[in-house]
Every structure is written in C-alpha cells, then in structure tokens.
Image (tube, rainbow over all chains, first blue to last red; front, side, top):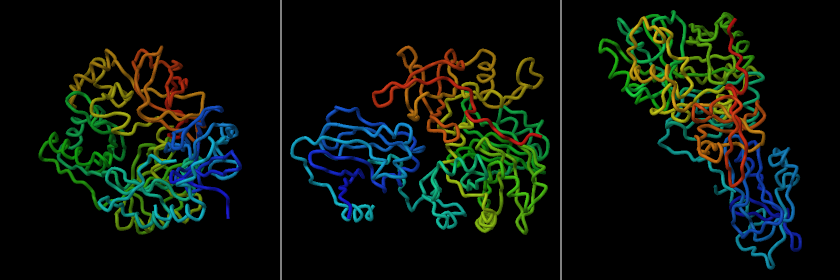
Length: 124
Length: 378
C-alpha cells in the first residue's frame, strides 16, 4: 500500500513531516497523453489549497495543476524542463512536480488514500 | 489536474462504418463534427504522429463528405464555384481548392477530382450540409448532386504507404501526387487518390461503407501500418502548414489572407483571358493585386511552451494578431503555430511575443511547412 494521498483533481502528494512532494496521478498522465511541456511555480511562492499553480501540457491538451495543500514551494523538479516525458513514464517517482513546505497544520480533509482514489477514478 | 478536452461521448453522435473496429483497436473517442471519432489508440498521439512520418498510418476519415456531381457541363459549372482552373484539370487528376462566398470569404476547402462522367468532391465533415446547400443554389439545375453516404474514406499516409497498398494493387505505386484511379484489392474496388493531410506521401481510398471495416483489418495485418487517430492527424497537418477549415480560416477570410492565393487560376491573374465567375472574384482578385491587410503565418518559439489557439500576438507591446492553431510538433521537436497578423509583419524572421499565463515567450515568423513535405512527384 502506497503512502501517497490523492485529490479529486488527480494530483498525488506524499507528506513527510512538514513537507510534501506533489505530482499528477498515473490516471491523469494517461488521460492527458504524451506530455511535452510542464510549467511549474517558482521556489518561494506560497499558495492556498486549490490554487492554480502550473500546467502539464500534452500535444493536444492543457492540464491545470492545482495546489493539493496550502504551502510554500520549496523545490521544483527541474529535470522536467528537458524531460517532460518523465511525467508519463514515472508519474509518482521521477516525474514529481514540486515539493512544498506545509503551512502549519495541514488540512487533509478531502484527500484520498490510494484505494479510495482507485475507487474514485473507477466511477469516472 | 483537469483535462480541458471534452472526451465525453454522447448517444446522439454519428459513427463511421469503422466504429466497432476502432473500439477493438482500443481507441479513445471524442466528438468531432457530430461524429464519435477515434482520437488516439493505445500507444498515444506522439507515437502515432512519428509512426506516420517514419512508416505508415491508417486514418478513418469517413466523416468527411464525398460528393458526386454529374451534368452536361459539370466541369465548367464547378469552375464557377471556385477560384481554381477546373477546366484545365485532366481526367483522373485532383486539385485542392476553396468554395467562396460573395464577399470572397472561404466557406470550405475542398478536393476536386475529374472522374469519367462526374466530378468528385471531398468536403469537411462539419460543412457538409452548408456546402451542399451552397453548391445546389449556385450550380445549374441540370446537374445532379449526390452525397455518397454509403461510402467510407480511409487515408493511408507515410513513406511506406505505397508499399503497404502495392502488395494488393501493384500499379498504385505509379500514381502521382494528386492523381486518382480505380484499383482492386482482392474483391474490393476502391477509388484511390494519391493525396492526404499529413505532408507525407500517401493515399485516400473511397470504398463501400459495408466493406470498409474488413478492408481496413486486412490492411492492418501489415505490421508497418498502424491505426492513427484524429489527434495525430491534427499535429501532422499543422506541421505540414495545412489549414483546418473553420479554425485557420472562416467565411470572413479570403484566400489571399489565408496565404492560399496559389489556388487562384493563372488565367484570372494579370491580363485575364477568361472572366472569373466564382463568388467574390472581384474582392479576391483586387486583394491579389493590391495585397490584403492581414495574412496567415507560421510561428515557432525558442522555448518549449505550446502556443495555443486564441493567444494574442504582440509586437512592440501592441496586439497585432492571434494564433489560430498551435501545438507541439512531435517531428519538428518544438512548439509550432499558425495565426494571422498584419501583412507588414508577415516577413519571415519577424519576432513577436506572446504572454502565456503571465509569462512572456518569444516567437518568430517561420516558413510553412514546418516539416518538409514528401509528396510523390516523379
């Protein structure tokens, strides 16, 4: 069982202490198709939960990235600049998008564990 | 994460004769021009795009309108609808042209073929009803205009397309770009054109709708040939600098503005020997000699961000046009776009900027096509 948590907008996050790593789910990358461009927020920017913080683009479509949890951008995955296809090949590993320092007590309401998320996407 | 493409299916959508085959092949479907069409198959759009450029792909384009027009003076009559030289079109030769309105705007782009005792016209799916009305209203009443709804249309495109088809019909390899012929593939007779919408060598095959699915399955037994969806069809045509009707031009765009003046017959140009009869001739020929204010251009970027349709083009901080089609060109290896700008700024190399989500990106006017075409012209 993976420790990843998921949003209904198909981001995943891995919370470790007061930090979290964020990416898009395998389902999301599959829906989007071959990723050709990823636009990420800048380090140091702060966002609230649900804020639009970037995009993942395929040849045909633009997928918005929403902040799954309130926090400040601490790191971005700069490999995606030249290798955006990592989001397809390893969405929950080397294709991560950014890391966040959480704002105080994280609001985990509405996040799903992997089995709940798999049930959720089965309904789509 | 939300995907802005509407992939939903509706029961009111029409299906092509190959629908069940697409499902079997694992297609993702999306609505297009009232049809449920395959957008891509299991290996994804980029793979499909590159496969067409490197080998061959089979596209179901049965949604397009195939129209047979017959009449005692059908060739001259059709010449009265389009700016192109149709009377000069030899038997079994095809030409790209446009249907124009009284203001010189492009109603649709069409492929016209001179066949024995008929003119064969292929029109865009979204425009079938409108085109039929337009043609019927303007053509002499002693012509018959028949929409061939019992026909399917398959496009086989790519450098190995000829080899895929020549296994069944060896003489097909002798066809030249924009030439047509009837060929037998076993029991199935196809009207074959050497043409396409990818910039590659390739063919379009018109055949009976009831034979189309088994015929396509037969062709797909060749492992070099893969099914290709509308997604890659769009990125391939964009790299080839080809317009999508209703997107890269509309009824308010003239052929001169759309950089399609090459469709206008020489005989209507300087010192015309023949009086043009096509709708909007006066406006179009005036623009041809005086120039138009705006022009369709190609655009590339040094960055990686795709520049999508609707994005404003900026020059010295002022808006000078907009993008009509834009994506990432898998063969080009970067963002490619087409759009319209002031003709004064349409010179190759002109630098412009766009703002995408608050960030400024630099573009430059680039020659079309973005990827060299490989049409078969021996």
